Amino acid sequence: MSQLDDQVSIRDTPNLKKVLIECQNLTHTYKRGGETLTVLRDLNLTIRQGDFVALMGPSGSGKTTLLNLLGGLDRASSGVVRIQGVALDQLSEATLADWRAQTVGFIFQFYNLLPMLSALGNVELPLLLTKLNSKERRHRAQTALTIVGLTDRTKHKPSELSGGQQQRVAIARALVADPELLVCDEPTGDLDRDTADEILALLKMLNQQYGKTIVMVTHDPKAAEYASTLLQMDKGVLVSLPA
Image 1: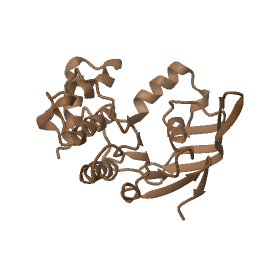
Image 2: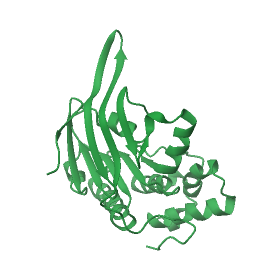
Image 3: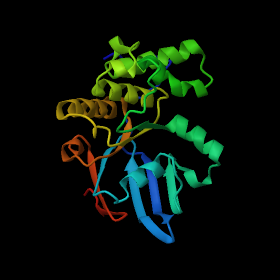
Image 4: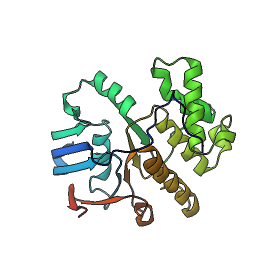
């Protein structure tokens, strides 16, 4: 595993004392037909920099909704989400999009890779919105693929990769802009047990060696064992918190 050079600043040491995420009185509702459904109910949560949090609970408990709010993909109906002291509800749509691109890496269950692009092209894609030149973009993408163990698969398209390799490409894509936070929605839900464990070990390495803060939604108790903190949700509230 090679270390990143000076051009890519993924951090080596997490600051475990610094608060990264604060949710205060977070409530989220949506309308279905003529009915208003409450997905999150007056939720309060603090996550510190360098935490690896597994978020569990039954379907419909609000896990993915919370993840989307933390990642700036949606806005809460009321309450505040602060990341690094930034109140997301105070940002315009354009500023929020810029913030999201710089601060959050997204990892999903089904990879969301573009089939016509190589692994390198898929990883490089988020950087097309930056001011980096083509050489710098290519270097960052190659470095991210090296971190996830795919140095020899850079030219392969998704159809030429296994499910585990495709998820590694997706993780490299999430890493390439050096985000502070990784949000993962069932990242191993489509993988067999052995491959899932490989992906979870990779996430744990990114947390421990590179200081990435990770919030992961999962239904898998074995996946949750890789995290340092377990949170349980039910009916839009946290029903248990770590001691």
